[in-house]
Image (cartoon, rainbow, N blue to C red):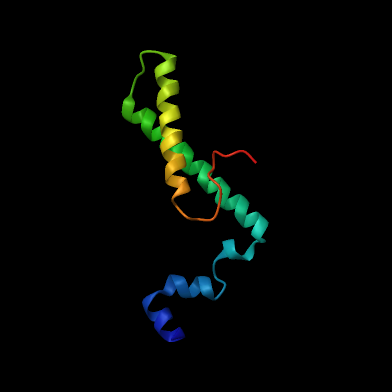
Length: 91
């Protein structure tokens, strides 16, 4: 079985064998890394929605677009099932 995993999924075999540096960290540090990734993902969603829209007639229009982007991100994060709270929730 171990040989089959190494042949078909060498990346997975490296992770299982301890080759992934993220798994070497304590669980608390891994949570920070995953939270940072979630924040970067939220930033990407907001930037993409602003870039797609282009210009805004008022500040209120820009605020509304950002609100809708965050709202859609929360729905996506809530259904992702990664075991972490959404990046936009407060502790």
